[in-house]
Image 1: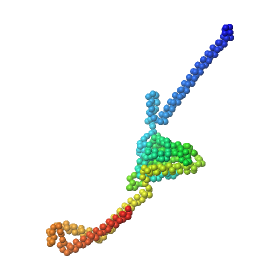
Image 2 (image 1 turned 180 degrees about the vertical axis):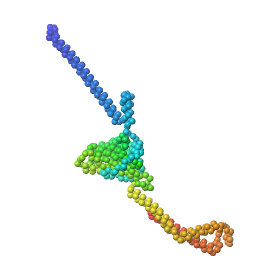
Image 3 (image 1 turned 180 degrees about the horizontal axis):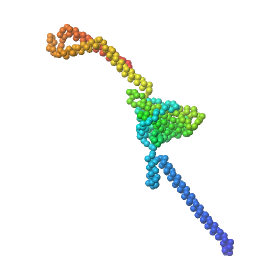
Length: 388
């Protein structure tokens, strides 16, 4: 008891009480600071989420329900939606075609020609098959080439003045003997759309290939009307050329070009074979031969008429014609006569020796003309069989 109520013990109790108070106050201040830090972190998270929402709105330009947000955000969303550059494929093609100031058709790229063929299809339909959204031809080609993860972006205007249509196509190219499967990005751009003429430039980027960041491959599609041949109603001339643009200087330029050329050749051989299954391929030499044959037939037709005129322009034919005409006029002038001698109704006999001679000469001449006509027709018929 004395120990407990000693002055030293009282001082120790006071010290412990003060230390507990200090500990409690420090603990409370710690919790207060912790809550403030947590509140700041929560505000940062909310701000980041709002910023992501706004950025997502600006990138996608899609309309959202802003009834729970402020009116200013709703007005901003409406303005973004009105200025959206996307458009339908048909409307974009029609708008580019309707412009007055059309650029000149670009020249073929310097890398070389990959496809140069004429197909029995209209240029517009061929353009739709190759570049329309969700084209079945592109899907079939991707399946044949082993391409996966095909994603076609929507066609949109490249610039504010809506001068060019463009879209982005992503896919994974199948592995080959030289390289593995590659993620590939294509930017397809209509650089010219005139009447029945379509020029599309495709920029291909493959960053995963060795030295892929130092170059890109360009492919130019040119769709034009085909040869004007009367035996073909509509035809399209498709020319595909390629080139390479180096973004950085590299010592492997020749190796890269040779590898790209080989890969493009194999790819577009499959492209041509698949397209030939859809549309008939018209050979240029055949078209030239057909044109020459038609011209020859026309010339032969004119020559046949000239031959006929030359063959039948002789004394026998001319004299027979005039004699028949003369006799016909004589019959019309004389009119019907009463039967005389041994004549009766329906039988008219020569009334004199001169009439008998004249009738004999006319019969002989008509027989000769008949043989001439039959020989000419047989000759032409045999010539036609030899030509066929």
